[in-house]
Length: 76
Length: 401
Image (cartoon, rainbow over all chains, first blue to last red; front, top):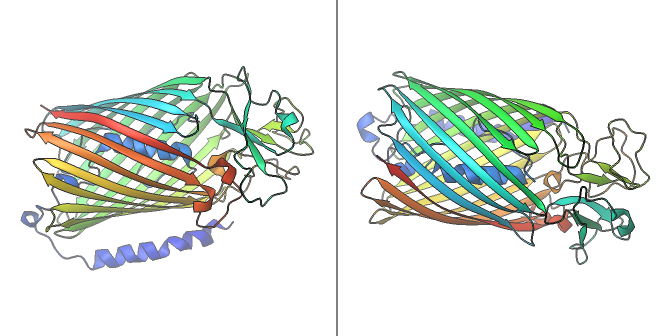
């Protein structure tokens, strides 16, 4: 498998991201009330998220994307 | 892990602590795990905080050890390892076959028992626009020990509309399987580049690119492979007792990349939030995967919150994976671990949370997941014999002092 060719499959997502960032409108700090609501946090429930990611990681062959951290395990 | 903080780039405004109990249960009498998590966070002065987490897992049950072609059950004797008795599940009888003889999964007995304890500490220092985080921890089982550390930087710019993130981590693991006289090690370095962008007053987008390089003993020390015709003279391949049965042998290096995109949108009419995640993963073992997850965070009044979620996952198989091997492979790499097969998984879950007096948050949740070869985007079904499902229930609380 050629990883470089496959990596091109992610280009539409990157282009969409750049398009969205380019099109974003200025939001003043006093207009960010909705963004500051607890259920608009990127991690609303870190403990449940941690166990869910641990379960999926131990039953699947993929990891990553959510940042560095956490140790390995001998999960069967 | 730490209790949730509502604002990024701001230290915790008080001491908080919490506990979460989870029960994981696989179908058909396989693995069951009880997980106990305790966590807390405390501010350190006005510009820093420290969080800590403790996890204890209690594991019991059976796990697939290898697959053999139907009709070769004579090869099973002694193949499950250790003192475990052998049980054979022929879940493939009714499935369509794409290989010469249908695979029969050989399970370990229900005597696998282990306890894992893990501790992590995470300190963060907050400058005006920059946050520096340093974390470390350890995880210990009777056959596996892991130490890890990582550094994270977050820089808020563009009038705090944009946050750029960088992370780097290192993991050092030691493996001492209980049924084999070996002691092995592996290490991993990982890195992350990320951007979080406020799109408008109701939505934001995050994109992360991560890379991980693993090296050392990357095989599962308990998994075996059936190689018809044997592979006794191949370097790196070790006999697991009976003829044609060997310990699995994976490459000793792996490069993994993942691209994650997360979109959050607030809907004022319902006071609700939609969380959408998409992850593309690729590695040099030929495994490509797509993960999509959607969550809807719906306040119900009186401080109740309902969060339904759906998750879909699909992966292609590793290039050295096969349910069993009809002939030796030229490079000597073999695995029949179902986690390296091509499959898809569909999960659905629900979490209820109730907050009391703005200080105590109590929650419970359930998730059910189905793993099926037939759910794979590629449509591959040759590993359908390994299909299974599990559920996960959680209950816990957080208290803000």
